[in-house]
Length: 241
Image (cartoon, rainbow, N blue to C red; front, side, top):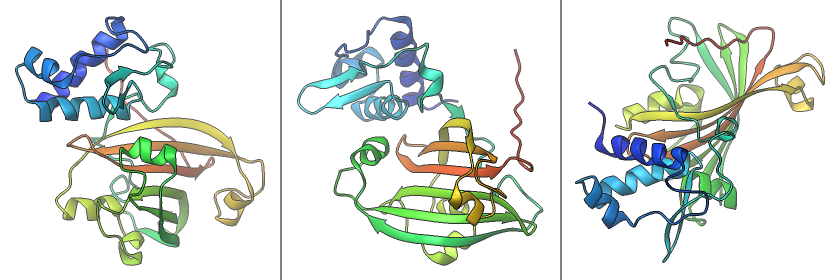
């Protein structure tokens, strides 16, 4: 059974995509939406958070929630707003069961987020975030380079945690990963890719995945960019009609 906030988010998303709520339009307040769906304001808040993560709406303090002026259903596939279930998480450890997955930690630090990062993670502009950089290996071969931004309030990270599985650590903390919004593209290798073993020379193709992930309460917890060697990387998906 789907969570109630997901049902509310799904219906509001359909109304936005159908044009019932136009770009730039003020949506009903949370009390009205709660009454319309016979639910609570907390549930409505979670539903609207999910739509914010998807890039469909934004909240203006004292004014309410608006459909983003730049939102377009036709263009939405090229933004973070495309929802994809995470029943098979894209973490290296979870997708390479039975293989030896290791990490070389390049950076674990903390700083104040940029305005864009704070908006995407739905956190106050003064809340610190972790900066994580590491190279992942599968059976001793370079698998990926990961650059991740994560609120420090989500969990406590150490070098030991980063040498293993971050997603596994979150689950041990009792957190449930619900979904992810991804942009998958082809890129050209730079000096850093060559240094990290992702490419053999500058300009070589690399697979790039930019990802915004969120927990089951709708809270975003991670902005990441992963870069993969083109010779050993592929994505698969099962599609049913």
